[in-house]
Image 1: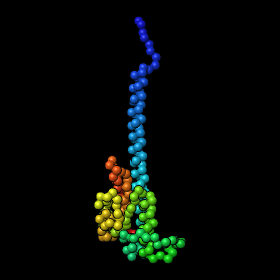
Image 2: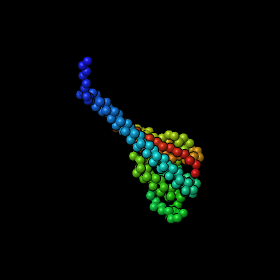
Image 3: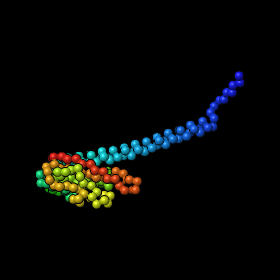
Image 4: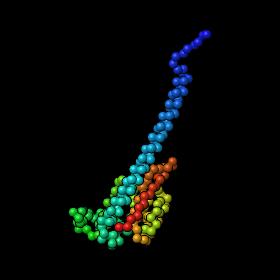
Length: 181
């Protein structure tokens, strides 16, 4: 009986194993990309959540401003209100509300891509967005902020660009929370 014994791999076996390994690595790279994208989106949502609760805390801290209705769509203006211990220096409740809105809008713009938001009384908080289809949300536009001024609950609505679609158009996300000061 004549047996032929070969050692090692043939060239075809090596090429097949390299092909299988390459396909596996491409799949792994795709999973990594998807994971990174999802992680980034989750981080932005976390930032939006923290910023929404920050504004709710600001409203609760300025009871006179809330009682005066100054937190319903406040104008975002820098009033140079600085806290000294337990009271702001030389600011009325309205000025503090406007200053809070300014600091909050600045934080939104810094932490979220094209981040904007509004705080208002709203009986239907889960609405609002890019009504004119220009790829942005203008919180000063009543059609886009959709704050009706009704009810006892305050809504904090935040919009940001989470990613872009295949045509390069922004995909806008919204986070909304309600609270009663």
